[in-house]
View 1 (cartoon, rainbow, N blue to C red):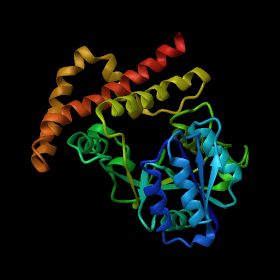
View 2: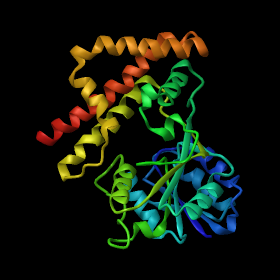
View 3: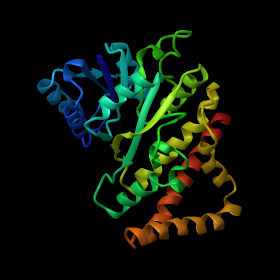
Length: 313
């Protein structure tokens, strides 16, 4: 089966090389593979790195995304793709050698329309803060019931997955498919797409043995900004009548709205989980994890609140 991998990226010089190396090491036969890296007008050395890989490995191709943002890049890649299966990959991640093989195998065997796996969140730098951020994004208190983040033991149905391995026909216009990614969705376009897919009768499955390693922002402020933007794009799409979120996406917003009442119970719960992690791994985590948990929840919730405010003003 010939497949297409699509990687939208912009200013990813620190990670794109590792990502592509992990794809080159895949067990899947390269003659049945094309990798379309869609660059959103990078200002660093991202394109130079991609060109070096494409010169050495002809199945890797560089495409241009003049509109910069992820949904445009994804749609450019889909339109240019030749494969009957499309796998979205993230430039901020590395992939196990059997990642592609298992995605294709499970998609074909299950009859699902989209399959994916778990991510193991890794520190982007060798600092206590970066390691704490990775812990928070892998913990139920930080990630909720996002099983692709916190892990699972058995395959299960899901409302979304990391990346995703899709039958190409799902991107056909209705009624044959559900169309392309919504280009108004600067963030969370995958969640919104998968919502449409399920609503149309499609099936999404999550497998514990499909594994990627994800590198989140390493600094406290960068992590805050990332969470804020994620939260903003939970509620702001209501402006153009797009509703895709589930209850777990709104919990941080409820936390921010009820902060005077919820702060003390929140602190106790945060300290409990921080202490539990610290005693198990590194006592220093106890002094930083509460702040990283708060960063995650407050920034995400405040972003969601700001999204609602921006709809009004």
